[in-house]
Picture 1: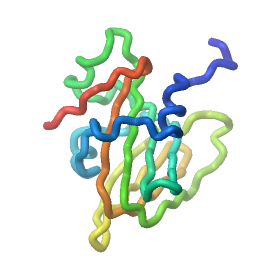
Picture 2 (picture 1 turned 60 degrees about the vertical axis):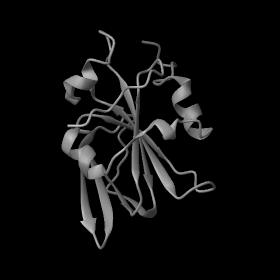
Picture 3 (picture 1 turned 180 degrees about the vertical axis):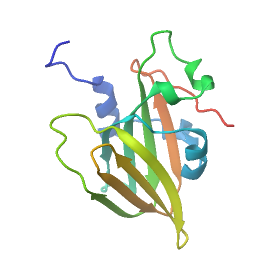
Picture 4 (picture 1 turned 45 degrees about the vertical axis):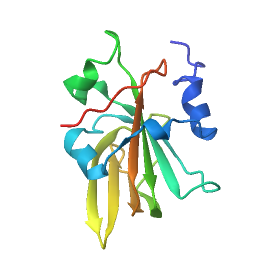
Length: 160
């Protein structure tokens, strides 16, 4: 493997920064419902983007572990499909915090668990990683989901 090669296709970051993701085609479902149907376990953090100049939202970007996705998603992948990019847009932000994050020595942070709880009419999303860190997002708005293969082909999230 070429150590200088980018780990992700250039379009992943560019469409995020240029605000070119097709959010009008996104699956709009509450994070609680997403968590009932899917897991982020063993997925890898790519990052979080907040375009505070345009809106009050955060976009989480995850290298989604295909081992744990349901058959309906597996069937949409090429036979050698081993990578999915999950974009999660969370609107109506109230607070974002990270705790316990330490230097992973250059390793990507693997997600251990994610959950959503209700607090005073808002939702708190908690994502913990295998290095002992966590991300907390308190929000009151909608959540939307987009999934793509590395060749930028959209993948449909199924409803249970």
